[in-house]
Image 1 (cartoon, one colour):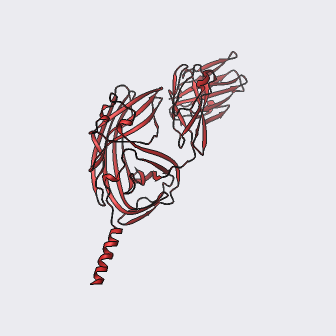
Image 2 (tube, rainbow, N blue to C red):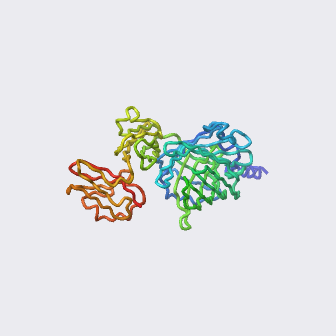
Image 3 (cartoon, rainbow, N blue to C red):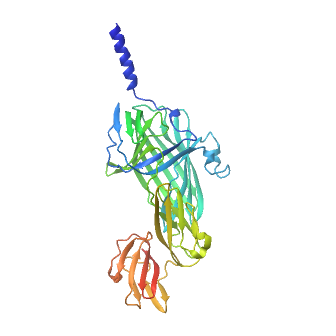
Length: 442
């Protein structure tokens, strides 16, 4: 009798230790929660293998950058009751998230920045569903707020989450700002909880973990500033490890479907705050500014928290520098301005200099000291002809990131058909100095 009771006790004890966990609504983030998510470089790691009572060991993941994810009250996202009334009704939404990242769209020769992204959710005891989104388009120095409510909510999770659960949901959202933006997006989301056990990352070991595989089929139709972009249908998936003591996945792996194979494109694990090497980079719009126009700079740097801009425009006085993350600047005269951005955090600093050419895009000739320099055709397709009265001229062809594509004296003999369409800079170097031209690849 005593042996039977002992066996029963041990069975209950170890059965409880190794039992799969259940992830409820209360285990997920609420207003005020925030997380540092480290982006890892280990894309070739085996993230596929899973199962019941499985021990995943990802302790060797190596971080390269970090994002800061915040969960906020929807009404604290920068809108008023008049600009976005939907989010002021708690029956619509009660949770919002933002990670502070920025991106750009390149349309018809314009670089359009996307900033201040927010996702809005309705969270209750049975599910977490995305119901709205917002962001700002930075177009020619003007911030255009974009808001949209989902016509069909995207159900991210259905609670409680347990091993073996599977479900499919289709969400949809349409954004329509006349003459500026039209976007119709549908999302088919299929969640399958295909593993449970223990996971180890550089952040620690977590024993009450569920592994969820989410397959997303997204169909996008987009038009920006009256220009329609190619329709996009893409299939991706996310592998997420949910741990009951943490209020956000401790590991998220994003994969694209390429020729029928899943290829890992992003790995993020929960971590403590850490400084990584900063990488400075930016874009600007319009791509071909004229004197007196407002130029909008889009900061695309990583790992920085302080920013220093030098526009190389001494005539602008104190406006020649800025510490804003995404500043605007007005160049009052034609010329080439070597704009420098320096990005820092508590440990690292990095700088980049990109030339901004201000003047007419299709100016094919200039006169310097009574000597005419002619660049034709402009726009060009394959070959460029430069006529200069200085027989010793040298030429450089440079892209808008400052990369030298050609340097020499025989540019007419070079076939540039391989270049992408866009704007480039030709520098003609002679005894009279350097003359810059913008030239368009058609």
